[in-house]
Every structure is written in structure tokens, then in C-alpha cells.
Figure (tube, rainbow, N blue to C red):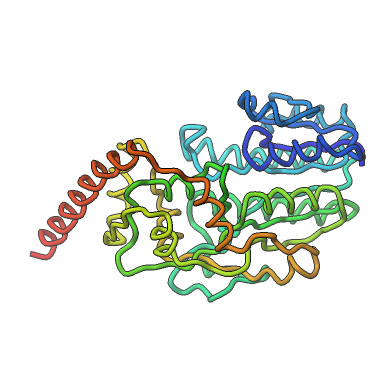
Length: 350
């Protein structure tokens, strides 16, 4: 294998993948692309990875690929939250327009041999009418309507179009479940680190998760070997949200499902985490996918089950006195929010 280009290299999965490939003597060059440079700590892990500060929405990405004679492109830059770019519009442009420009560059390249997309199981959506288990051929009625999931559906559509136009190129689409682990920082881990965890009253979703090391390994395998196709990637088994919160020794505060937006505003103002409408759906209904194709056609079985991935994450958490004191303050504000919601509900029905 000659040259690999990885988008989103300043983020967790892209950076960890680059570090592994940089340590592989069979890989001639590793080029990492992102709009911001990696942190000093992450940069130290990248080894001989060549970092290029570039925006994949710019057609100049084609020049980078052409000059380096890139043979494998790993698109790991899809953004799950507008937090880093400031707005939902900017996030959508990065995800969708950026992918279109990247695929246009791949289309023109006579050196490209493989394209790997890190997608998400969020493309199946979340709802009360969902099947018990999603397979790769299933789609929810109407499809995701908002946020990251909607972007991922569009991105996958463009990737399918590219695969039809360039049948000579291997295309792998990895639909990863929500990733958790001892070192990753994402919306799920921030939510579970909250001293007080708001959950939807009357709901206890089944969560199927993926350990961070398994996520990186699946990306690596798709990068260095012939494993085309669409595949769900998740650990075996499910864990109810209530059990995770209990194991984390957090205070669980059930609130009416319609009040999660209000609670999200409360905890956001506390500097902890925001709860978007999309994340609220996942925390209401959960999501479980079939991984038969991962085990058979792709040829990988995750080392961690969902429960073991949760345990790995929890083992790295060491709550201190400050967290406990902060939790008391947030708890009072969440309870005030619940009282406000009940008051509004009574006023609306009177």
C-alpha cells in the first residue's frame, strides 16, 4: 500500500487510525487532513503522519490527492454536533458539501483504489415503530429528519453514486454504533459524566455501543484490505440506559420526554452538555443493529461487548468532590425545571 489520506485527523477516530497506519511499515505515507491542527497531545501520537490544514469543501483537495498519488481515502470527518463550527448550517456544509468535493476529487483520480466512509447507525433513525433489530438493508419510514443522521443519509447517497460511477474502486461504508471508551470524549460520554443524568420518564432504551478500540480497528482493516460493502459495526448485546447510569453511580432524574429540551438548556448553562432533539430520540428509544455481516462478510468480531465497553469507560472515571458538589447544584436546577414543566402542563390543561 502506498499513500493513505485521512479526513478528520484532528478528531479521535481519524487521529487514532492515522497513528496506527503511521506505525505500519507497509504504508508508505499517511496524510492527515483537517480544518484545525491536532492538539499537542494528539500530535505526538501521529508519528510520521503528514498533517495538511485544509478544508475538504475546497476543490483544492483534488490537487492534494493528485500530487501525493493517494490510493486510499478514509473519510472520517463527519461531524455529529455543530459545537465545533458554531451552527447547524456550517455543520451541514462540512458534512455534505465537504463529502461532495472529496468524492469529486476521487472521481477524477486515476490512482485511487479504495474509499472508506465512517458512517453511523443513526441513519436508521429512532422511533417507537422501529424494528427490534436493524439490518443493513432496512430503513425507517420517512428516514431521519434532522442533524447528523440526516447528513449521514445524504453522504451515504453520494458515496453510493460514486461507487456506481467508479466500479473499479473498493468502497466500504462502516455504520458504527455510538462509540464509548476510556479516552474518547463525545456527546454520549459527556452525558454519562453528568453528576445528574436526566432520562425520559417512562422510557428505558436498549443501547448497543461500540468500544473505541474496536471502532479504530474496523477502520484500519477496511483501509488496508479488500472489505467493500455496507456493514453495521457494534458490540454484541445491549445494556439498558438505567443500568449504565446506576453502574456509573450517577443521580438519575426522570423527566417528561417533552421536557428534555428544557433540561438540556439547564445542563448546557451548567457547562456540562447539551441535549439535542436527535440525541433525545436516541435516549428515548435506543437503537439495536444486526452485526452478522460484520462477523461473516467483513470478517471481524469486536473484542468488547456492549457491556464490556461500558465497563471499560466506567473504569476510567474517577469522580471527585468537585463533581459531587456540582451535581447537587445541577440536581436542584433539574428539579426546578421539572416543577416548571408540571406548572406549564397544568396551565395548558386548565
